[in-house]
Amino acid sequence: MVLAARRWLGTPYVHQAATRGAGCDCLGLIRGVWRSCCGPEPEQPPAYTMDWSEPQHEELLWQAALRHLQPKPLLAAAVGDVLLFRMRAGAVAKHLAIQTEVGGPDPMAQTAAEPQAQFIHAYSGHGVVETALSAPWQRRIVARFAFPVPISGPAEATVQVPEQALGCASDNSIQQLANKR
Image 1 (cartoon, rainbow, N blue to C red):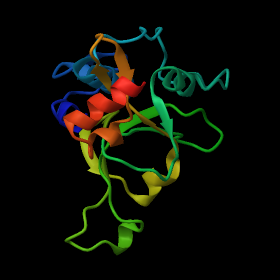
Image 2: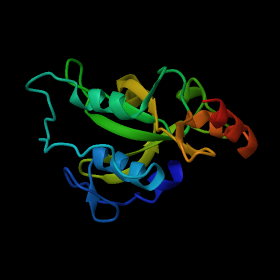
Image 3: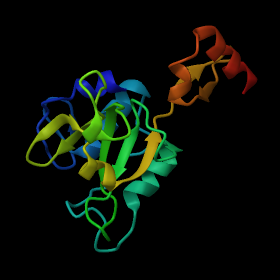
């Protein structure tokens, strides 16, 4: 997920777009990574305005994430997670990113040997950038998700396995897990 997201670095910010190198917004970045890592998009988003769903106070982006991604506890940070941010208190959550590094518990106390938490996002005025997941950004996270990871079993069935399981399991143990499901 992170390697796919890093291919988007430098893509200009273009509202409602989802084309690497040409333009995307934060949702377009997630859609593009989905296409390259998971396959065809499960649904096409409707047209949306820059204010997203604020006038109606509906959590449309959060609802869509719950339909297609695997919810995770906020404190269970892992590389490749999709982060959902609420940019202002009382506003709907409407910014997405992909976590690229997991740092220590206190970003201000990290040493040079300890990586700092980072994320990639498409940001208005900046395009797709990788930046520190600083305390102000961390405070805005309202939900954390994992991409579904398809695995083909002997009957060509697709099984959803949490991404974190892939980081510590051999191909053989993944196949055994798929066969049990």
